[in-house]
Structure formats: C-alpha cells, structure tokens
Amino acid sequence: MKLKTFPLGSPRTRAGMGEIRQVLTLMIAALVLLLAASVNAQQAPAAATTGKAANSKTAGGKTAPDLEPKAIDILKTACHRLAAAHSMSFTAIVAYESPSLLGPPLAYMTKSQILMERPDKLRVFTLADGPRSDFYYNGKTMMAFEPAENLVAIAPAPPTIDGALKAAYDKAAIYFPFSDVVVADPYKDLSEGLKVAFYIGQSNVVGGITTDMVAYANDAVFVQIWIGHEDKLPRMLRAVFRNDQTRLRHGMELTNWQLDPVIQPGAFTSSKAEGAKRIVFARPDPWMPSRFAPPPKKKPAKTQ
Image (spheres, rainbow, N blue to C red):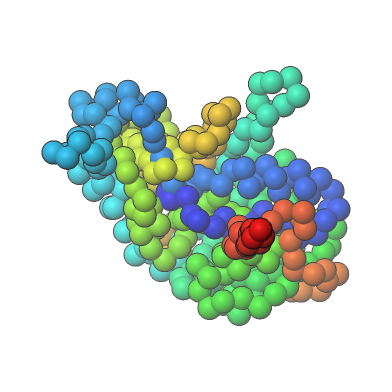
C-alpha cells in the first residue's frame, strides 16, 4: 500500500544463477505494489470523477492535499485488520511490465505463497518466470534457497519482520512487492507522504466478491486498490510511477487469505535448505549502488 523508501527483495542471491540479473532488475522495477501512491496535476481529472478536485487552494493560494474521509476510512480499516492479525497466509500474483525491443512492453509475472507470524517469522515460496526461490526467516536467521541449483545463502537477521525485510534487501537485494502487507504497521507506511486519496466506487469482479475501489497517491506513485467490502482485505492493486515516462503498469492480486491460521512447528525453516551448498548472502549485482548508500561527497572547489 505504501512505497517504502527501501525495497525488500528479489530472492536471487548470486551472480550467474541463470538470468538472475534480468529477473532482479524486473522485480526491482515492480517495487510496488505493495502499497504506495502518487499523483500530479496531469492526474487531476481522475480524481474529479468523485466530484472533487484532486487539490484545493488555501487562502494563501497554496495547494492543499485532498484526502477524502471515506477513502481514508477504507484504507485505515484494511490496514488495521492486517496489523491486528497475529499470523496470516495468502497468495500474491504480481504482474509488471518491462520495455521490449519492439516498443510495446512485455509482461512478467511472479506467484508467491506467503506465511507469516508476528513479530518475527516469515516464509515466502516464489515461482517467477524462471526458477523457484524460497525465503525463510525465523527471528534469528534468514535463508534464501534455490531448490533447482541446491544453493542456499544464510545470514543473521534482526528480531522483527520489518527489520529482516530491510536487511534482506540491504545485504542481498531481496525484495517482496507485498512487503507492506506484512509489516507491523501498514497504515503508517501507507500514510507517510500521502497527498491524494479518493473513493472510486464498488466492483463485483475482483475475487468474485464486492470490493471498494480507492485511489491514493504520493509524490512517487499512483495506486488503485480493491478492498473487500465485507472482509476489509486488499484484493488487487495497480500502480503507475510518476517519474516513469513510459507509464509502465504494475499489478498485484492477493488471494487465498487466511488470518490467524494454525501454523505447524518448523514451518519457518527447512532442513533441505540448511543442507544445500552454501553461498554468500550478498547482492548479486555489485554494479548496482545501494539505496542506503549516502551520495558521494563532492570535493571542495579549488580556490584560485
């Protein structure tokens, strides 16, 4: 729901793991979805369909953000329901576009099965347009496992899911587009920098249920989300990034929701993964600068 200032990771953990660089680049391009938003003056007509302008003028002539109360209530309710769940499982199908040599974009997809338990356990099985990858986090360590090549990277991890997601990206470029669903406070992430939110209407198509459609935005991305009218769970998201001149679209469908399911012991580790050939838990793309690296300091100009 909110685009984080840090992304949280492709499961690839070593350069040369068959098309790893291409897959990683595509997944980073899909940073989304999850849950973020942005709009500019060119998008104002869409907001006008609610009967309101996307922005209003204050007495001083400055533009003030327009946060429609009904839209905010729907977003808050969904986020609070997620935050209240001690554990959950769901499926995330992510589709994202990437430019092709012919011009029109190509679509790539991933399907992830997620199991989590607050505050310190997460498991993600991902099938992309490529080899499967598994991710395990048990509150102490995190493992990125490539079953097809029988390779595993293991590293110490922070004591919370939020911290582990950040560490996984910092250390190994591991990013999950649905990360904002499993963080401790989804609404805090969503609301930071939020400038526009408006209610669109209802749909009876997504997931075969009645959903409330809301659009919301910050300075980075514009998002449309479908939220179950009865269960208040996010069902689908579509996003377009403001600075993307090609207006590539990113989408995510969330299905098979289970809140507070019974979780079997040992669900957040794998003896098969632990016995695989070890590789370094590190970024597969040394050519790509870290988003957390401070900008290089400029050398002071020489004086005459």
